[in-house]
Length: 324
Image (tube, rainbow, N blue to C red; front, side, top):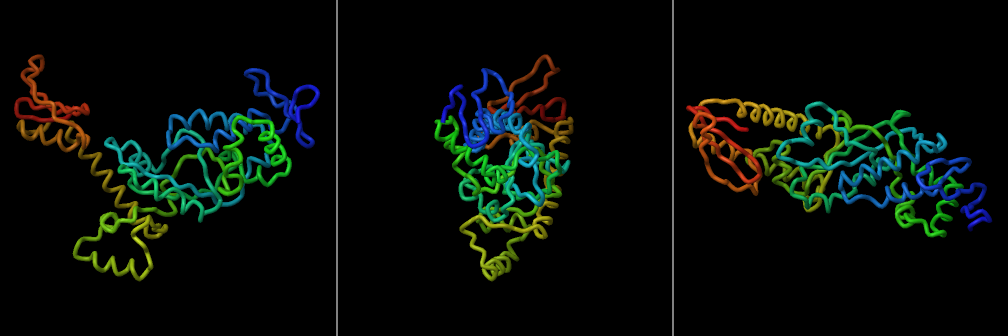
């Protein structure tokens, strides 16, 4: 309830409304700004990375001055991250070639592997550019931990404060109370590591699985029998654990390395005719891109330029072809 000085009291702690722009805690453990930031984090951002960044920054700032007990965790944490296919390989290449993918902000992890394994597959694999889901396992160091949300909800003082925040019409009360302890969530600031992939979650599609495992058509009947014996239902996404996923990862690394090398090669002039230049552009254009036609570049000694609607450009000049 509001106290005589206009602050909001709960139990032994009192959180006074912050002055405009102020982030000072004074003697307060949980401020209104902290609850706003945590509730907004738990409300989510619909997989929009640009929207996630300021939400994560606000949570990191507010959590930084909490007691150390809320920024500790002992044990292994898990995160499921869907890996997306892009024309420029900007997401897959850093992870599979350098071994690290920095997501740019704090991210959500869980101590409950079973929860993570079930998380989001049915919806996510409906997106055409999803290659697979990877489950990462990480033992956090002390500098990795932004906030242990599970530890908060296990603390009676926090629970009382959160209830008071909701009772007083807190702006993010719905998001704050939506998950409670169900996610076993810990927020970390740490990059994803290729070496920490614990399992791969693949779409429930037999042909996709066979291609991912390198199983040719002559052996697919054997794979099908193995899946049936193991009780794997291909009508739903399924998990390939660490030992088998390592083989798939090595093939992905080889594939991406070959694609990048090929793209670098075709950007250097090499012998070819107009048809060869056109074929280069067709090979890398976006699936929906339209061919816009040819034009002669008189300022470049008669070079011919082919252009597509997505910005792909190919050239042919004096018996050589290359991509822009």
